Image (cartoon, rainbow, N blue to C red):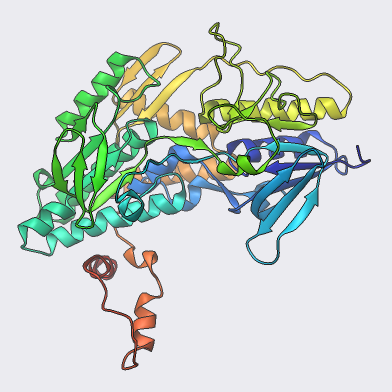
Length: 460
């Protein structure tokens, strides 16, 4: 190994950021060069995406800038498009310029996961994901724009389609987004849309399994369904999305068909497909095979953790059990991984990762939640408070913690912000139309949604 080893961290998410953060703290200056490569210059704290979409937290405060947080690391904004660990060389494609190769000594594979989609007709054309802050902002603007569109028309079909919101996937991400956005829309209609009633809205959650929230006990999942249905929300269990047509007609496996302008896909994730362009060992689910120490099995100087890693769960007796792909494990694995890298660089033996799953917390809207932590089950306001307390403690850096708490404090004093900044979806459209006025080949007139979004911005 070189005198000053290069540690390549592929990915700037939970594992990538926390690993690099701990390495720069534990390693003396000049001891190693830490290179972090990610397509985005920030880490997204995904548990706060539903609150960001609902307007309870400023979107900028749920992302952590890598360059500011990792001053002693080299941050590369780009993608690792291939990796030959046998030669210890990675192929990097920066956001601008020609691709190049980077030599390294120690690898941390933390590229995370991507949305797991299915070949459903119309999904790619009409679906909206919910894994990053851009999608959260888009969805917030889209939902508010649909309220504007419904309030501005007397056509019952247009209104019904605009006020029907369909979510596919009953895990934590899907349920939280579903509940938080309904809560926001309900508040907006009650306070600012006298021509609309909350009874006009239709919120549909589609889940292929016979339950939602698989991380909690069945009675807690059933209680959550009961709370959602009491709010007039439609939860379809043992049901699949069959298709969505160009006319935005959603077809479900139970035979129901209805028009919906909004289709949000939160039905799980899969390991980053870039793993197929590496020589690292993967299991049948495409995850990197790891030892309990978080070392890649049979591969020296390579480590992995998080969503894309199959890490043995030493707290369970079941053979072959691996840790769940969630933030709770990712953050703890990152710290153990960094400590183990430091140990090997100092000639010591790495230690295995062991953490018993503490439980789960989820927000179901303002002052509403569900939680199961160390066997203790909480509902309503106490669960919501625990959700906020736990996650603010896990947001990286004091700066972000303080900003999130400030957002919550201001939200408790002032009315909720329900302004749609729809022009963010296509900020140059109006200018391009103006520049092309009177010229041949000018752009077509804006769609109904563009008009609704532009109008809502001016009204705000």
